[in-house]
Length: 99
Image (cartoon, rainbow, N blue to C red; front, side):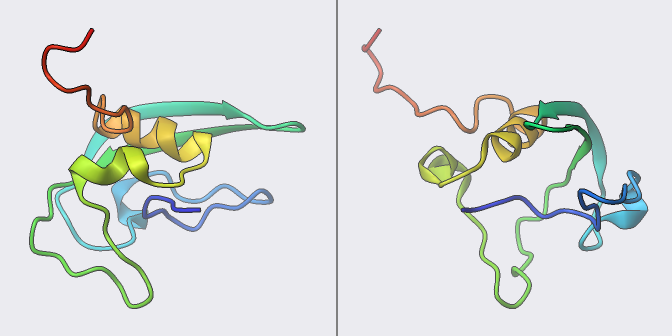
C-alpha cells in the first residue's frame, strides 16, 4: 500500500509533530489534525503540506500525480491525511455532466 511522507512516529512512541520532523526541507504549512481509530488505539496525526514541484523522491520512493491519487492503494488513515492537506484529492473525479 502507498503512504504519504511522514516523520518518525510509531505505535510505541509519538514523533515530533512540528515541521522540524518533516522528511525533507520545504515550506511546510499546517493543514490540521486527523484522528483515526484502530482496533486497540487511537492515532492523532498533525498534518502539514508543502508545494515542492521539482523535488525528486527519495531513493526507493515515488511521487503520485495529484490527478492519480484516487487510484492509489491507500490505507484509510493515509486518505484522511491527504484529505486534510488537499481536500477532494482522494475522490475520483466524475466526468462533467454526470450527477
